[in-house]
Image (cartoon, rainbow, N blue to C red; front, top):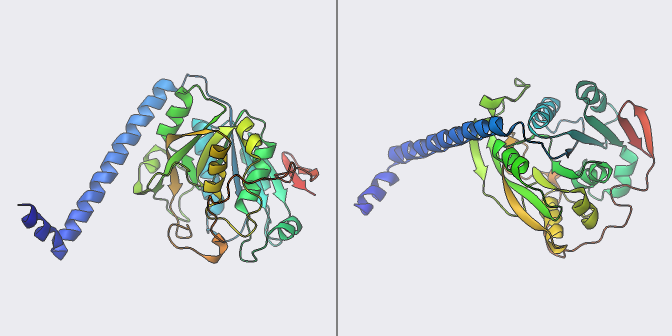
Length: 315
């Protein structure tokens, strides 16, 4: 019987039907789980939330045609469900483009922006194909976060509601960090501007969970971030793998890492999981951890010059 089933599955048409059915089952199970987590959130919504700052980074280039819309959609979602404040680090902004900072602070009162000008980027970066040193930029925000809890995340990442429920119900420990499994969800490029519950259930695929996490999500106490001195600033040619290197640093300093749930990634063709491209830089690994940043990590020795309400440029 087993052999017969295998033969049937190997027939081209049957194989396609089997694959589509399995995908349908995954989508249905994901949607049902998401609806359940939403119901649990409604039950827990009156529980006092921990005060969390989200750190996001980016620049107004053509990395995605609708980068600004994705960024604003995820900020809106994350603030609604958990986040108290967002710090956006606008790194190496193109000279011929408007800063994202002004539109963001106008729309979101709980948001600060730090602009890192091109001359600082060029002093640090040793890979001309990488216009955004993502994890140096995240260090800028992490260092300046004032909340007891800091989440490093991406501009196209939204918190899964199971993750929100986990964080809200936990008695958070300053020596415990939280990572999540990434799930790609559909996003209508150049059409969509908001993320609602229905959108959050539009499953495309899951990236298998790694304890060391994904660049889309790691939550830790400000105390732990300060203890490890942020992400490795010797990675001046890299983007891929710098996230894993950072959580490995936490383990090396005695932290515990737990799985919070999922993080929703708004799917796009420029993701490194679709195809490695030059702007993704060199790949970092966890080899050589622990690393040692100096006490001025996160550009702590630069002056913050206010250029608008809740917007500062580092000089």
